[in-house]
Amino acid sequence: MTDNVYRTLLELYKPLPLSDRLFVRIRLLLSNLYQLEHYVPREGKILDIGCGHGVLSNLLAITSPQRQVLGIDIDAKKIAAAQRTIGERGNIEFEVGDAAFLPNHSFQAVTIADVMYLIPPDIQRAILASIACVLEPNGLLIWKTHSHYPRWKYATTYAQEWLMTKLGPTKGAGIFFMNCEESLQAIRSAGLHPIVVPMPSHRPYSDILFLGCKS
Ligand SMILES: C[S@@+](CC[C@H](N)C(=O)[O-])C[C@H]1O[C@@H](n2cnc3c(N)ncnc32)[C@H](O)[C@@H]1O
Image (cartoon, rainbow, N blue to C red; front, top):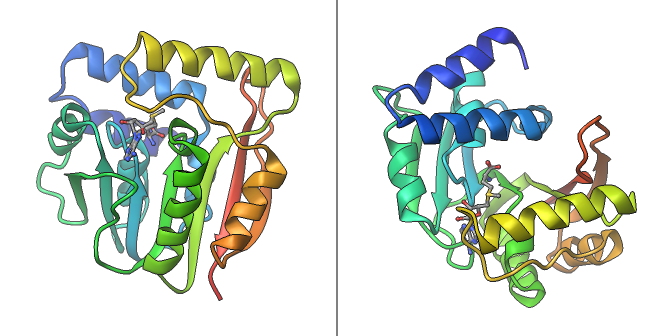
C-alpha cells in the first residue's frame, strides 16, 4: 500500500474514538488487505460482506472512485463506526446486514475477508451460492480466509480468532475453517470457477485468498 493511500485511509477514521482508530491500525498491520484490492474491478458495484469497521470497503472506495462500494456487517456498532468515515463521499455505503441474506442487487465483485470461518460450513456453502447469484456475468468473488498450513501459522491464527470471538469484539457463531480442498469444492458447487492465490508474508498467520469467477 502506498503511503498516500495509507494516510488517506487513516484520515477517514479521525472522527472515531481512539480505540477504533487503534483497532484499524492493527488490522492494517496484521493483514495484507491491500493484496485483495488488485483483484477487485476498478469500476462497478462492489459488495464487501462482513466489512467490520469498513477498512477494506474504504480501501476499495478510495483507490478507485468509479467503484460503488456497499459494506455490510451483522454488528450494528461496527457499522455505525464505519458510517462515520463516509463524510461527503458518494461512492460508499454501509448497512447492517447478514451474509446469509444478501441485498437484492447485482455486483461486479463480492469481497469477503476473514468472515466465512465465523459461520458454520453448511451456511458458508449456502452463502457462496447466494454470492454466485448476485454476481453479474464475469463477476468475481474475492474470499480471504486462512489455510490449515503451515501448521504453526494455522495454530496462531486459530488461537487469535478464538480469543477475538470468545473475549474480543468479533461476532460469530464459532470457528469453522474449511480446508483448501473443501473451500475449492464449495466454490465449484456454487457454480464459480475457483483460483487459489497464496498470500505469503512474514506475519504469523496462514492467510490465503480464493477467487471465484462467474462465467
Ligand atoms: C475478523 S472481522 C473482519 C472484518 C473485515 N472484513 C476486515 O477484513 O477488516 C469479521 C467480521 O465478520 C462479521 N460477521 C460475522 N458473521 C457475520 C454474518 N453472518 N454476516 C455478516 N457479517 C458477519 C463480524 O461482525 C466481524 O465484523
